[in-house]
Length: 255
Image 1 (cartoon, one colour):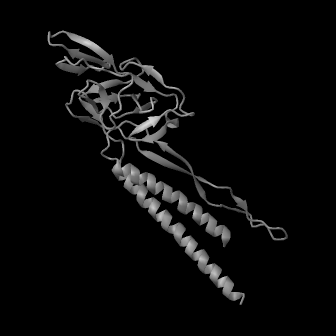
Image 2 (cartoon, helix red, strand yellow):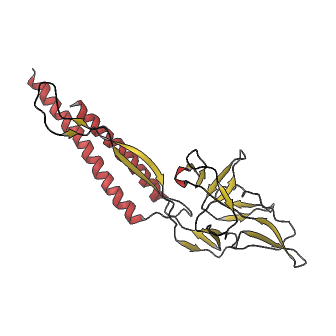
Image 3 (cartoon, rainbow, N blue to C red):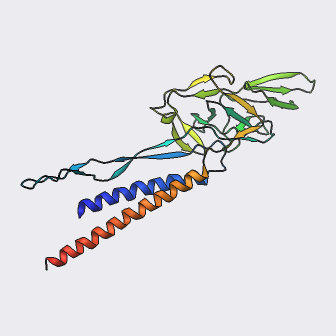
């Protein structure tokens, strides 16, 4: 009965992990720029149904399942029209970069930006400044962003002045990015170092001004996956209960 319980326990853990990921996806349906995550499951080692001195059964039995990976889905989300001048959606591949408190970079698809009273362009959700930092002169009366990422400020004299450039960053293997929380990603060993280019560069994305990228979570798909995971969890729990009952019967026969 021990192998049966271990097999079922591995299934319980795998399905519980999948349910946690699905619940997190559904909780972020309204989070702009959020990328859903998926769970990949894999079979554990199979065992031959043979024993010394026994006839061969002619088959194999599995020993359970395990979580092979939890990876992001970087498919694009729908575009939301906001009309706010500092909202930028990345149209195509690439990420925006922000500076963490320790000075290191983090990357996001959430282009909800705001201008602080001190004239810095920052990520609205976290307050972290863009990289490279963009500072707008205090005397600027109008600030605008163009689809190629250039930031312009108009002075009191009415002369526009370019005060900064928003860059896009992309990775050879974005699946290797490490989720940090706060809708941010960190470069990892598997992602490689980021490549940098201005929006609109051939082969890169551009910026949609006054737009935000919605979460790419498909609610219907996630609900179906959650129901399937719940049923699988229940079946594994029932397997443990049945094995325990069989063990109890075997113990009673020995008395």
